Length: 355
Ligand SMILES: *Cc1c(COP(=O)(O)O)cnc(C)c1O
Picture 1 (cartoon, rainbow, N blue to C red):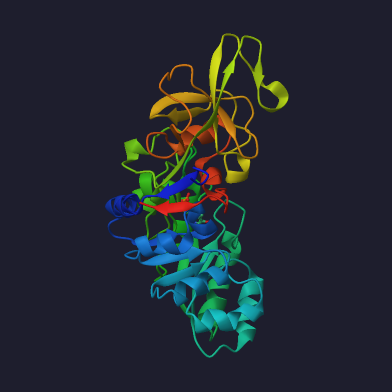
Picture 2 (picture 1 turned 90 degrees about the vertical axis):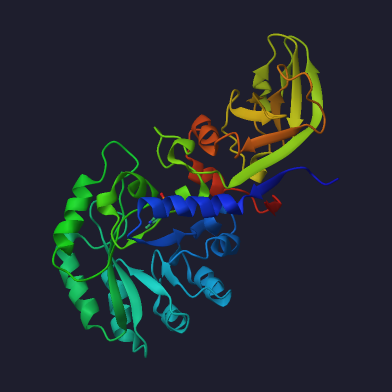
C-alpha cells in the first residue's frame, strides 16, 4: 500500500456550487475564478467540471494559454492583466481578455500595433487601493482605451475589500455606480461574498472563487447554511499508535503532555502536505468518522491525534483532515487563517483523486 494521504475532489460538488452561484445571480454571466491552480483543486480539472461557466479568470498567460489549448472557447480573463508588451501577441493569438489597471498598460496597448482588438476589463480602484485607476483618473483611462485601435470590448470592473465583513460594500459600490452611470458597458464587481450578500452588485459578470470550492467566505455563516458543498476532502489514515503514560509528551517541543493516560494516533499528513503547522492542540479532525482533535505540533510529514474517545481506532483507521463532515473553515480558524490559504497550499506531492 502507498502512503494513505490523498485529496479527493468531488466534481459533482463543484457543479452544484456553480448552480448556487447561478441561483443567486441568474441575470449575470459567471466568470469562474480558477487562479492558484483552482485554489489547489487543479486548474484544468475544475475548468472541465465547470465547462458551462461563461468565462474563466486566471493570473498569468501560461495558465490562459493552457486553457485555450485544452479547447475552452469562453472568455479567459487575466486578473492582473499583462506585465510587459512582449505578452501582447500571445493575448491576441489566444483571444485573452486582460484587466487594465494602470496607465502603463494602456500605453503598451497604444504602442503595440496589434492587428486585432483585445477585450479589456478596466479596473476602478473604488477603495481597496490595490490595483486600479483612482476615480479621478478613471474617465481619462476609459477614453484612451476607447480610442485605442488594439482595444475591443471594454468591461468596467472593481473589486471589494470588505464584502465578507460587517463594513460591507456601500462606499465602494457608490463610487463605482457614480463613475459607471450612463456608460454603456458591461460591469463586473462581485466576488463570492458579494454574490451571496449583495445582489445590487451582481452586474453583468460575477466572479466567484471560494464558493465554487464549497467554502464560505464569511466568518459568520457556514458553507452548509449557504448550500455550498465541499469539493476537496483531505483524507489519510493512522499509521502508528502510541500509548502515553501520565507526564509523557508527543511530538516536537513536547508541546502536548498527557495529564492522563492517552492513546495517540499518528497520521500520515504534515505541513509539507499543506496542513497548517500553526494548527494547535484541539484542532478538529475526524477519525473513523468521529470527531477528535490533533495533539501537539504538526510536523513535516505527520501529525498526532487523540484516540482516547475512539476505542475502535487503530492502524489503518481513516482520518479526515478537512472536507466532507469537517469544514475546512474550522481548521483554518483554529490555525488563525482562512480556508483559501489552506486549499491553495495543498502540496503538489499529495495525490489527487476525482470522485
Ligand atoms: C480572487 C478574486 C476573485 C474571487 O474571490 P472569492 O473571494 O474567492 O470569490 C474575484 N475577483 C478578483 C479580482 C479576484 O482576484
